[in-house]
Length: 319
Image (cartoon, rainbow, N blue to C red; front, side, top):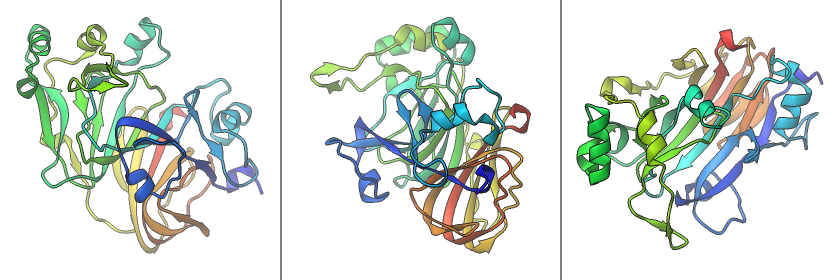
C-alpha cells in the first residue's frame, strides 16, 4: 500500500501528574504501569520527552520522530523541519498551577528551542466550571505587587466554560486548568512553562519550583480573556466545524451520526483524535481514544458511525 493511502495510528504515552485523575484509565481505557494519578495522555507526540510509536501499517514499530525525519515527503514537510504540534488529553483531578508560556523570541533568547501557544477543546467539566485565563492587573508593576502579596483571588481572571467550548491560549497568557476539567490540548511542540503559583502544595516533601522572574516578564498586561473569546460549538452533525484558522494551524471537530464525506482533500497532513464513540474512517475501524495522522494527499472521504473526531492541520501557508 502506498504510504499516503493509509492512516498512521499512534500509541499514546501517559504521564503521572500531582494534579491528575483517574479518567484516562477508567473512561479512555488506557493501560499504564505507572502507580500514581494520570494527568496527561501525550496522544500525538514527536519529541525527546515522549515519542509515539506507530502501531499499524507499513511503518508499524517505528517512532514518529523516525518517520518524520526519514520520510518528510509523507507529510509535505521540508527536510530538517521540526514537527510543529503536540496533542494531549488532560484530566485535571485537581487544579493545575497558574502558569504562562513565552513566545518564540523570548524562549530562544533564553536558551530554549521554541515558545508555546496552545488551545483547548473542553471534553467535560463540572456544572458552572471556570478556567483561569488572563489577569485583572492593569500594569506590570501591579501584576508584580499582587503576585508578591499573594492576592490570587483579586488577580486571576476567570471565564465560564461548558462541554464543547474551545478557546485559544496565546503566549503570554496567565492561565490554569481547574479541577474536574477534561480537555483536548493542541499546542506547539514545546514543553516550556513558567510556573507562577502552585497553591503551596508539595511533591515528595518539597514545594514545586516557581519561575517568577521569567513568568512576570512574559505575562501580557493588561490582558483578560472575554466570554466572547470562547467559542461555543454547535452540535452540527456530519459536517466539520471550524474552531480555529490561525497563521500556524487549523482545527475542526466533526460529530458523525450515520455517514458523511467531510471533504478533507489532503492539501496538508491531518492529526486526528477520536474523542467519543466509534465508527470507521474510509472503512478503517476507529474508537474513542485512538489517535492518528492522515498523510498529505490522503483523502478522508467517508466517515461512518456515531463518534466525535478532532482534526488539526498546519496552516496552508506553513506547508
